[in-house]
Image 1 (cartoon, one colour):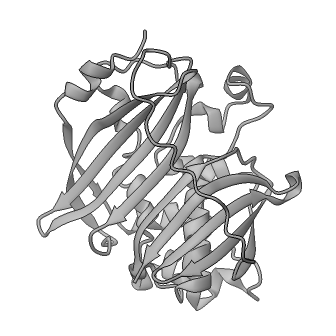
Image 2: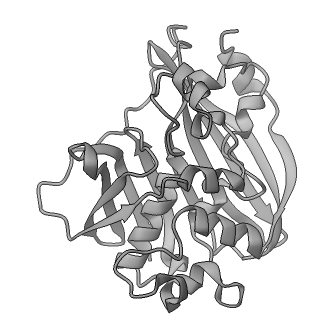
Length: 289
């Protein structure tokens, strides 16, 4: 069934109440590699890693907002006018803006809607917006850009490209983060159950030789690397974070993360080291205090 852009954009926002606690935060952090940072003598007990894994010291990476309440980013796929095959869906980009630090335990009202529908010719792009607020006010705003292959060509607005040139200067920092062979199996326990990331048969139907890593897992690994490398490991300094998913990552590969700095901003590019530095995250920016 084709996407009905007019119906999707006119639909009433979907509202629900979500909750999370330290176990959800810890599981998410483990799913993006906390407790296993390369270069540390004993990362499982390193004080910098315990900020992500030990409840008595716990801070929350802002990218947790993408999975809080067992996954928020894809809620708009259930909106009126949207009826798509998950095998045709790819995550094209993600942005998160936090309005204040996310607590390690909380409840919030979550509102989800289709904010935009773009026609890219061979694909449609849905911008799914999720906002969360608790009794103290707004917590975060998520925008997920979802590519749906084969659903373009309906004559809609093409939308912004959002692409910027890679900096000419050498990066300030380059770090590598290995992706465990079972990383996707662990990460999906935070709420993204798309079989593309676990079922070889489903992955083959989607055109992949084997299951691929969640784009949002790469997204989280990258934010943690930037926070640990350039922000003194302080997650509360992150104000916003956006990335374009430029390619797939396979579990077992190594992410090479390049960082360029400017005032209150880090520009990032992530590549798969074993595949001739094929870019997997582009147009990636961390705004910070």
